[in-house]
Length: 112
Image: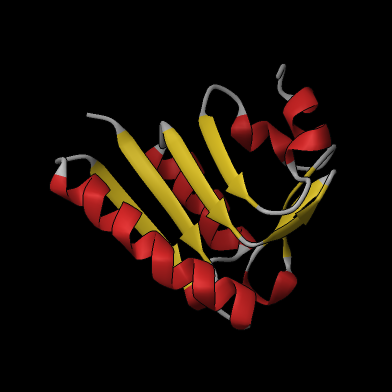
């Protein structure tokens, strides 16, 4: 069974907006019978996300948050994925990151 992992911070107006509207995607995933994991608000942090990826091994990960060419930031703008640090967590997964510019460099680190 395919596993979908949603990472949905909610700490300011931008992430609150994304958090609210991505709930429909979360519901759709569950309605289709996919194994769906949601970490939101305070649980959208580096340690929790790393633990879920290593333990559950999701096929698809959707990140909402902030970013730049070398990182994705989540709850309270804490760095969650960073080039040359832990970007290997993306290997062999489909990643959708709704965060500014994060695919510019991170994609290249895992063979994109």
